[in-house]
Structures are given as structure tokens and as C-alpha cells.
Amino acid sequence: MIQKPRGTRDFLPDEMEQRRAVEKRMRDVARCWGYREVCTPEFEELELFTARSGDGIIEEMYVFEDKGGRMMALRPEITAAVQRMYLNEARVTPKPLRWCYFADCFRYERPQKGRYRQFWQFGVELIGADTPVADAEVIMLARDLLESSGVSFSLHIGHLGFMKALLSDMDLKEQRILMRYLDKKDYDGLKGHLGVSGSSDLYNSLTTLLECRSLDEVTEITGKIPEYERIEETFGLLDELEIRYSVDPGIARGLDYYTGMVFEAFADNLGAENQILGGGAYRLAHLFGGDDVPSSGFAIGFDRVMVSLGDSAGKPERVVGIVYTPEGRAHALRVARAFREAGCRTETDIMGRTIGAQITHASKSAQFVAIIGSREQESGTVTLKDLISGEQRQLDLPSAIHEVVTSGPRG
Image (cartoon, rainbow, N blue to C red):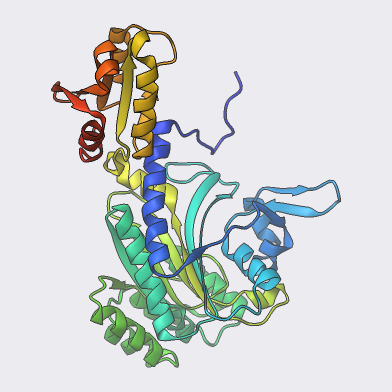
């Protein structure tokens, strides 16, 4: 028997309904903030992803040569693709651009709970704005999107300027290596690398920085860095709007294109793999031959959100089964159409089962059955049975539809 590829999943109807319900709530929030959906190809030229991160990232990607001899890659993330699209299609569009997306990505890595080779992201990109208000907007939108999903989380906010202030005497390559150790809280690796590079004196200040939880504590170590006033204004905006967050100067992010504000969110009920959102301010378009446009954004790990929600994601739909005798079939099909027009998921028997067998089958997925026989055919009514309570009543069609629609999702 052929199995699905390692690191991928099959989603059965119940799970897909839960995912679509959460996805819709996120889309609605993004729309209310003025963010409009975009879509990019699932594969791009390999250079799009190696331009900034180098060829080393190839080991983590699905890479292939197409029939024209071009090196292509399944997208490992979408920010670079959105920036490429901006340069190709929207360079002269008035700024800022508020874009969002929901799409799958691919990475060749060891699968584990909440981490797959094919995974989904809900992301946001704000292109062409470089102000504290822009930083605050993206962070607030991230908070609202996660809250709409129902997941319980904590939000951490930092700035790359904090680490860079302590590493300013080192070249850019060395800074990136040390910032990765700091981002992963790999103190042993940090200490070893500082020792090799002759900078062991930085160890205490760097590790102390990671423990700071206020701007005052940070500035005692770094001094007032050039970006301090902007950082203070951004945090002030969040405080005025009572956004709950933790100051976290230890965030560096794994991608090299971030330039300033960075932030992450962590699910409260997941283990080691509990990060469900990451983002920040960045500049990337100039690497692809475009202008040096300031941008900010984030991506939500949708799969981890769903793992965190578990059964609390709920069943979003009302379901009604139409049960009928042969003589009631015509009326039953009209009743089914009316329920569907009212927005109810409605199923009718197509197997020629008896009334009893139809009810038994419907009870596996439906909360109600509408029973149609010769009596209901003649009177134009339905006998509506609540499969949860067992209550059964003969109603006119509008009343039966109202009963189902106002009952809310159940089961």
C-alpha cells in the first residue's frame, strides 16, 4: 500500500472544517485591519532564497532542476516571494501596501509534533512604512489574529539593536553567528565561540542582556542605542492600548534580513516546540534588484496553532439530515434545498435505505433530522427531530429552518 510522504498529513473532513473555521476568523481580522490577500507560486527560482541566506540553506529545502535546466525550489517561506512579487507587480503602487496570505510551505527537516515538511502559514507583510506606528500596527495585528483563533499565548518583543550594540566591534558575519547562539539560548555554544574569537569578556553582558525584561534594565547594559527613542515610542503605543507583552532583548530570529523590531509568540500549552508566530522589521527587496523598501511582517505557524487548540477548535457547522420515504422524495429534495440556501450543511439519502437506517446513518454526523413522509408531503411540513435531546415536532418549513439555524454548532 502506498503511504503519504514523510512529513506530510492527510486531513479528514472534521479536521478540515476546524482548520477552515480558524482560518476564516484570521482572514476576517486581517480584512478589518485593511490587509488584502495575495498569492505567490508554490515554487520559485532557487536564487530567491539563497540570495540572503547563502547556499547552506539548500540542505533544508526541496530543490529541483526543471526541464529547462533552471534551479527551482518549493518555497520554504513566503516573505521573500512576496517581496519578489512586489518588485514584479506593485513597485509603483502607493505605499504602504497591506498584504496578507495563507499558504503552504516546504522544508526538508526531521518531522515531529507541530513541525512538518509541508506546513501552513498565515502571514502579513506591511511594505513601504518605516515608523514606530507601523511597527506597533503589525504587532497589534499579530496579537488580534492569534486571539481570534482562540489559542492561549504570550507575546515577546525585542529589537536587534540591543544585541548589535554589544557586538558592534565585530564584523557582520561574526555578529550573525553570535546572535544565533543568543536566539537559541545556547550559552555553551556562545561561551565557546567567544573564547575562540578572543571576546570572552562579552559573555556576562550578553547573557545578562537576555534576562532583561524592561527597557530600563536593557539600557543599563547597552546604553541608549541610536534606535532607543523609536523603540520607546513603539512600546509606548502598545502600552497605551493595553497590549500585553514581555520585553525580550534575546530575540534575534533565524533569518538574516531582519533589521530592527522583532517579536515572537509562544503557545502556553505546547512543549519545546511552542513558538507559533515570528516576525519583525526587515529590508529584503534590494537583494532582488529593487529599491531598499522598508517592510515589516510576521508569519503564524498555523499547524502549531491547531495543535495547541486541540478539541477546543470545535465543530463549526450545523448539520441536518433529510430522511424520507419514497413517496416523500420530491418534497424532501425541496426541503433539502431550502436548508442549504439557509446555510446549513444538509445531507440526503442516496442509497435507498429504510427510514430507520437513514436516521441511524444521519446520527453519525448530524444534530437534526428532518423526516419527510406522505403526511409531510401533503401538508408541506417537516417532522424535525433533535438527535441530541430526542425531541421531535412537526413544523412548517420556515420554523424548522429557524430551529436549526438558531441552535448553533453542536456535537
